[in-house]
Length: 259
Ligand SMILES: NC(=O)c1ccc[n+]([C@@H]2O[C@H](COP(=O)([O-])OP(=O)(O)OC[C@H]3O[C@@H](n4cnc5c(N)ncnc54)[C@H](OP(=O)(O)O)[C@@H]3O)[C@@H](O)[C@H]2O)c1
Image (cartoon, rainbow, N blue to C red; front, side, top):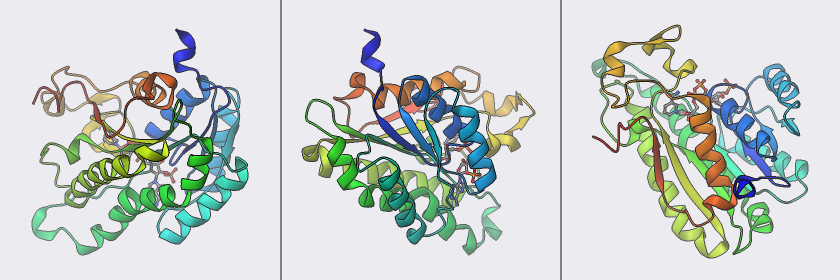
């Protein structure tokens, strides 16, 4: 049973893996036995995080700002040479948000958010298709896991217009790609986190104490924990998840499912 979730010998890329949810995900994949490449915009932060995670397994720092398609192409080139032509798992986790009142919501809040949350994942997947295919078989497909959000599924009144639209877009893109890539033995799924304590949700918390008004909308009345995001990703990356593709999986204490 334990080898159902074993990732020994697998290679994985986690964008934004130096901190926040990406760090939780990278640590989960490492603990399950995978070699993991992580990205961060800042080289020193990326190197430091990879060095800390080296205690768990092989972790490689690939600093990168996914602010343009060219940067995503260049990252793919480095992933290719890092893992010798085979990539078993991509977790497109890096994400950008922008919040502001509707009447003054600026046009500049759109291109950067759409780039990091939608176009960069697409470009990375496209560029790394040969490596994913090289790692894939009908028995054990390669896995693309895109991090969406409950904000792309239900209206949350967060005034994060470009963010929620970008997350709905990555959900649909993932299902489109899942259909196109099933015959190539590449599974594509979306994980939709709810409310986890990271930098992105700092404005909804006072240190580790969540705003009661936010918790009131969560059926389980609490934030998510590290193991609860890592566990779902390890499941999707492992033999246990090999028959799952085109799925949108909420990890949100019931927000989407109970709504
Ligand atoms: N926390 C939640 O409750 C929650 C809920 C729903 C969905 N999510 C999603 O989960 C993912 C991770 O977010 P988080 O909560 O961990 O927030 P976070 O702590 O703010 O992390 C955002 C991550 O994205 C990376 N990133 C941002 N802009 C980037 C760029 N231009 N190029 C490359 N990387 C960039 C950051 O890397 P560096 O800062 O290291 O460069 C960081 O690792 C996002 O896709 C987010 O939308 C989070």
